[in-house]
Picture 1 (spheres, chains in turn brown, blue):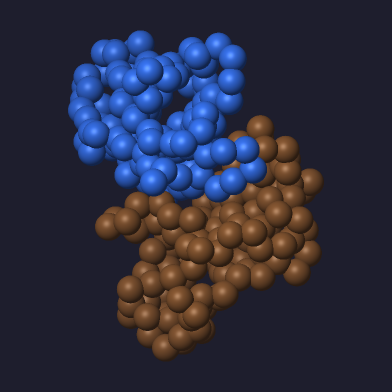
Picture 2 (cartoon, rainbow over the protein chains, first blue to last red):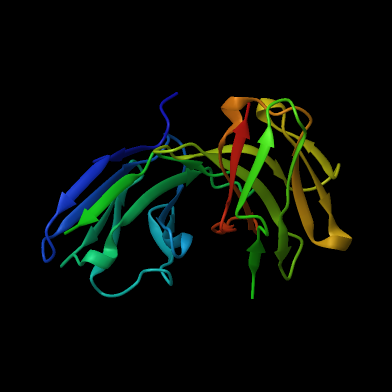
Length: 114
Length: 112
């Protein structure tokens, strides 16, 4: 079975530009999570969805960040405008709605804002 | 506040030696506990999980972990380390249906 698929794997752009990260969860999974990994702060939750509905977005840094899940097979994380401090690795993870299931992670998007 | 502490930032172990990575958590309820491994440039791979029942859990790649409620610990162990085990290891906690709270990770180096 295909795992969680993230695109792009790498993104380098200049500050002020809009950045869109994409995630395709594992088929049949109905919880989706976005995490950010930095050297200083480690792995932190940004937002998660159950059945396409945002449940907890308390980790979203500020209004420049937005996330959507228009259907069960696709989610986006958008940063507009981007800033150098947004440089990080962004991970998407999915899980079945049964709370006893573990999360499965994608390979991440390494984002560099110049 | 809920938190996970991995006291060791970096550990070096000789190939063939035993390994123990420490994890302590602070959580109001009985947590779900996980260990993930991350190789450079890769995502996180689940090694093992504890939800309930037997406090000694077996995972992939020969790893095991023991849940000790009295010590709020969930230490990861392997009897004999291989060079391919060199990676970063993350302990995480959650409740049913919620997001993971991660420790800061322990980097494992394996010397020959």
